[in-house]
Image 1 (cartoon, one colour):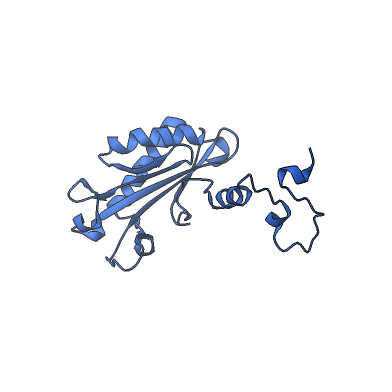
Image 2 (cartoon, rainbow, N blue to C red; image 1 turned 45 degrees about the vertical axis):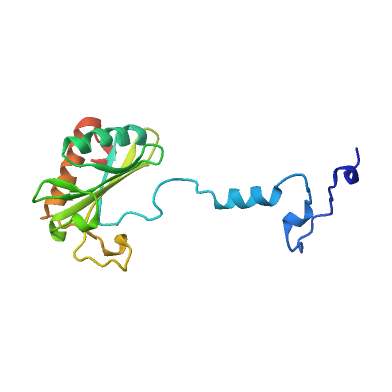
Length: 185
């Protein structure tokens, strides 16, 4: 079968080709659409921001999947609610938690005391084979501004803050459960 019978056109690929997809004109397929979908598909469901460098960081003697699964059970044990969780991406985020009223808040309009309400994010990243670098980020918002993204208003809770102490308890429980490698001590 010749190329003309299938409606294809093959040309020599040069460096000066303005559009590489034009070199493969195949009307019976959706080559351009496939390229567009592949280019726009996210690789991960993890949020597109990085943790704050002032966050709590610990190396654990377990794979990220085990640490993330353990966090899914530890968070409700501390009376917090999981807002987002992905074992595949190694990410867990709690709902806003009022440390004075001891209850979770689901929407910004429910938060009465911004300074006492915290959200905790966990990133479980692979470190060396069989170990995890866990980053714990307890954040609060000192003010409310609906015109700005929520993440822009957040600050890491200071060490004296009750939210930071809750995050430290999570780290201690995970250290107890999985252990810390000798090199990380």
